[in-house]
Length: 350
Ligand SMILES: NC(=O)C1=CN([C@@H]2O[C@H](COP(=O)(O)OP(=O)(O)OC[C@H]3O[C@@H](n4cnc5c(N)ncnc54)[C@H](OP(=O)(O)O)[C@@H]3O)[C@@H](O)[C@H]2O)C=CC1
Ligand SMILES: C=C(O[C@H]1[C@H](O)[C@@H](CO)O[C@H](OP(=O)(O)OP(=O)(O)OC[C@H]2O[C@@H](n3ccc(=O)[nH]c3=O)[C@H](O)[C@@H]2O)[C@@H]1NC(C)=O)C(=O)O
Image 1 (cartoon, rainbow, N blue to C red):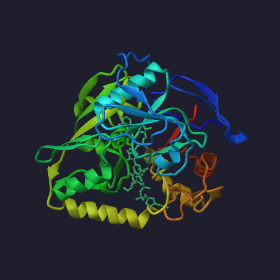
Image 2: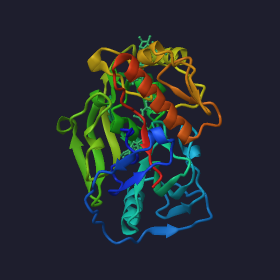
Image 3: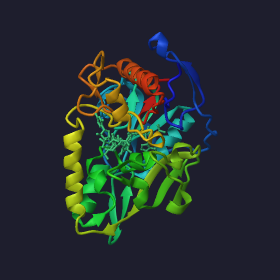
């Protein structure tokens, strides 16, 4: 049975492979074909395989080889080593990192807080580019231009404290601004796209582009970036918010509700499945009605607090989590005839 969710970023080259998981979930995957990236020659990339950190604002990039564990970079706490790992603190460094990957014909992914992805225990055979572009500029009242690596939850709190409404829900979302725009994150009836004024991206060609909101077609947990072949990375987002006397109160209320209903003290990746709204259901309801709360595979478990959150109880492997996802999908399909679709992204190791 093929697992329908993505195995890596759209920036990965076309490949077909088989996964080493239990036979019932053995599958072949096809990466989308990417255009060949044509970037300029690389002059700013340096390798340093022993150092684990790179200084903020340095124009030099330090690539760490085979040492950085992806379990340290994902909220699920699962994942083996990245073949290459680099942090970028500004757009110039990001372009250099992408260029380097291109020159080496190496797959790469842009990683934010790792709150929506499942890495494999075998790691990732390409380069993980950790986005640390974290500036916040106030352009005018209620208009914020924000680096794509800025924590989305911090942005939600800052805006609400300053009396602006639209991003109150973000106060509890553990991703980055770039990840939130890429996924069109939402909660409590609000969505990231509702407040976007414009976005800045860099392409595979190394060009910067500014896109106005009206050019971008967002949907429930979907954005044009998920299909955009020429995208290298979102670099900044400008949000336009409205003044509201109750913004702070709303933000705090949403956060309190989240703590009441979601297992925030445990390791998860938020909602595993999208809600099948078109069929009038929520994924959590269906999973609970199928009697799957508390179901365990190895160290992976369906949360007893919220059925659409799957927990790493401490020792979960990627295989455990993939198998649990497959079992839950099958069970819900058999009982209700509803095919759940994953919200989390599986990053295939090779
Ligand atoms: N509502 C909620 O309660 C929760 C919501 N979430 C949401 O999940 C998302 C996860 O954010 P985050 O943890 O930062 O993302 P991740 O680090 O989990 O990255 C997931 C994928 O998003 C893409 N991505 C991330 N940043 C960028 C960028 N700057 N430019 C282009 N693509 C990017 C990458 O896709 P690719 O593989 O193609 O490179 C990446 O693999 C957010 O939308 C977050 O709000 C997560 C948990 C709970
Ligand atoms: C956590 C995420 O986003 C969350 C977001 O935080 C919350 C809050 O607004 O609303 C969505 O969850 P959700 O649809 O499960 O919201 P909830 O309000 O918790 O539950 C919906 C319905 O399911 C029921 N429910 C919930 C949990 C459960 O174990 N069992 C159950 O039956 C609830 O009673 C409610 O009737 C988002 N998830 C999706 C896939 O749309 C995420 O994207 O990662």
